[in-house]
Image (cartoon, rainbow, N blue to C red; front, top):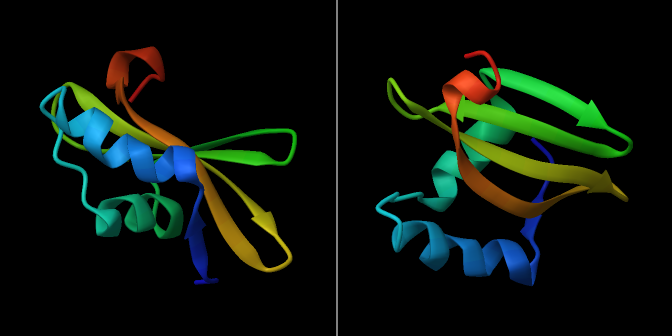
Length: 84
């Protein structure tokens, strides 16, 4: 997998999602990129989703820039919203 860089916004998300009861380690974000359960594209951005439990998944928004994967925001999402 290419090198992964987190934007400042993405770095701030670790604490933000934790305050809502989701423990999201950096390794889980990287797994969502390397081995997603679902992907979608919108322009140059890829939306990769990995299943967390029966109700939620973790969606990671990222794009590749000069061979580096740049993670924008990531957030928990209800699986039923995306049909998982």
